[in-house]
Image: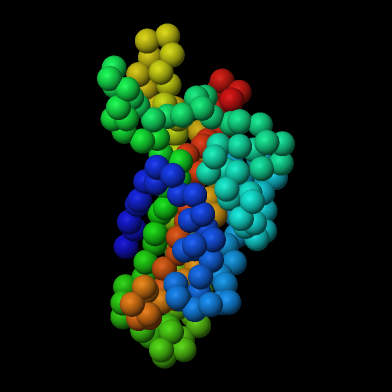
Length: 184
């Protein structure tokens, strides 16, 4: 199953939620890894470092500190100054195996099912990235253009918040993509 959560802020999300093994155990950490052509373009590979995750969340190049988005804030404010909607900084794509598979994999110790789930996550993210796009809103245009690149931090977990067996992965994509046509 795939669930998608758009996040307006997400400050500290990696440290508070994604890196915990069973969400509650102290000292047990899950290492995230970078995935996607967008991550490669930014020089991000291997394990996710919190500093890099936070930089992307803020729309910054983790290596140079250069601001990568078109606008400083994508919050929408009305004429009266009230915020009408918040900009989305991150998207958490949570990919979960069925409960029966999780039980057979974790309780039953069938490592093949864990490997199959991880391959399914990788294939899903590949397809997701192939369909990534940017909005074109200049010179009166109102269209989307496929870019085919995302910077995604992937964290694999094996329990739910209730501590039940639950194979799932959080694939957190920064709300950024490189548009090769416009070079930005």
